[in-house]
Amino acid sequence: MVWENPFGKNKVPSVAELWKNEKKQYRIWIFSYPLLLLLLGVFLSVQLFLDLDIRNIGRAFSILSILFTVTSLFFYVYSVFTSYKAKDFAPLGDRSFFFTFVSFSTAALSIINSTIVMIGNLSLNNQNFVAILTIQIILIGLIFVLIPFFLTKVLKIKSVFKLSRTLFIIEKRIDEMKKDPKAYSEFMNIFDLGHQNPMNAQQANNSENTQTQEAQNKPKTKEERIKIALEKLNLTQLHEIAQKLEISGFEQLKKQELIKLLTQILAQQDSGK
Image (cartoon, rainbow, N blue to C red; front, top):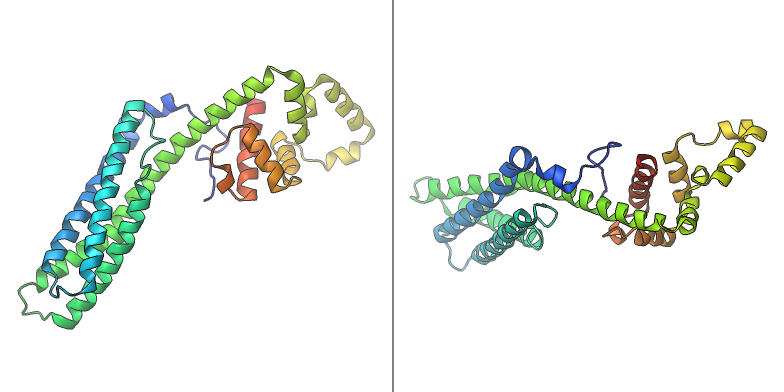
């Protein structure tokens, strides 16, 4: 998993601001995806009934794929209902995408198996040949092109709302920390943000006057200073910072991904106030 901020260095919109684009930007992807899952289940069912060999293991793959597709569709529809009720797409697809992955895997095995069966047992004169070939083409298009494309769009929508919600929690946490100036100053000093403290700012100016050449080689932007400071910390220390900021899912991030996330958040927070 790679963390990316789709808004770059711009301020991340709030969930309420993002929701204003629900009809214009998100609705078509949100509702088209379950329709494709429904089509997948229908065509897998048709393929199941057109299969020539009842003993074929492809039937087992088809049945499993249909079951997992239906389960994925159920959880997705439920998450859509929950998301619209909360006016937040962060919960979108919760518990659904795992079943989708299993469904895709079993469906792909089913298609491979049925294709082998079709090549080995069917002839152009067989009455089921055209129907099975058509089903195969449609299933291949659904599983390997359409559904992955729409799934990617849905995941992007979910990630944007999740990012907005996460940053809101972090900002709230930082605001709480600011109520204790001493604790907040100690926390921010980890990133060499001495200018936050007037005394530190004065010391920084004195140091800059006496060590001009050295200062020229130092990173100029606040974001660069934070990034360099974070890179000196080990993963355990980075986890402690993420935990203080109540960042959810930080354990899943690699060190460089976590550094990128913390740099973006802290630089924006520090300059945006």
